[in-house]
Amino acid sequence: MKTLRKNKFLRRALALLLVCMISFTACTSEEQKEPGQIEENRSGIKIGMSFDSFIIERWRRDCDVFVSKIKEYDSNADVMVQNANGDIETQKSQIRYLIEKKVDVLVIVCIDSESLNDVCYEAKTAGIPIIAYDRLIKNSNVDLYISFDNEMVGTLMGNALVEEGLPNRKVLMLSGPNEDNNVSMVESGFRNVMQQHGVMITDCVHAAGWKAEISAEYVNQHLTDLSDVDAIMCGNDNIATTIIRTLAEARMAGKIKIVGQDADLEACQRIVEGTQVMTVYKPVEKLAQAAAEYAIQLAEKKPLTDVTNTIFDGTYDVPYFYLEPIAVTKDNIDETIIDSGFHLKEDVYLNVRED
Ligand code: BGC
Image (cartoon, rainbow, N blue to C red):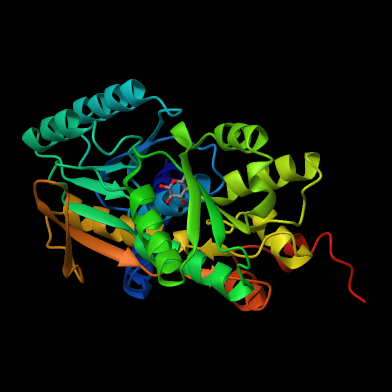
């Protein structure tokens, strides 16, 4: 009987000690928490992301950085990512699904800048703020448009070609689709530079859905017209990849100067190998991180910090935050692409022998 009571006492004392130890650890870890450290106890914001598609290299990176930044802030956050595979109706129904799921914020990379006003209206009616990510959504009064200075992208492409020299003063443009609002902005920057230098634009082709095979088909059908064209402005590096291959197959490799945008790995490799003049590096990590911070502010119904610009969406002036794009050539690829960690040196210089 005595040993039984003694055991009971010992067990109680041990249990008490354990409770004390646990609460002590909890207290100290709370006190030691650095600002910006992962907060385990947040309620869990819900964010809906709607992507055009993941075919182009950059978008996976945009998505991953965005999700990890949100999770860093709120480990209980739920980021629902939808991929419309380039189909407008799919994108609309995926956005409607996210509205039904009562997300706190919608982040949209639209396929067609003109076709989302209905769903955006539905989201707004449901009290869900919208971020137009990288591409402007027209006439929809979104809460934020976050992108790069797209006109500057075109200006940088134009300047790079002018610096390279355009002896025949003839350039072809193989752009993206008109439905992507960035396309007209890039073109306007590019056209201005060409005009200033008296360069003729022989044609401007818009590849529907950013499908590079459409641009390649054009090139194949116009090979003779290309004989005196100095350069091709490619809407992005994916188009540049296909065009350089197409020209090589037609034994015209190296005769026409090529520029693109996105700093895709293959484009960076071509720049150091000398088969592409330049690309435009857009630090998408910074864009995605900023978008994540703004998504949190919108979810928490706080005012957006540091957004001082607006852009006209066709009906409304909407808050506009943009980052500067950077021209990348052989001369600065190490500082811009490698030092920033965007690509590894060994990957960029994979096919270049060090002498
Ligand atoms: C973006 C480019 C991208 C293209 C195709 C454009 O809106 O600005 O960076 O290459 O879409 O996805």
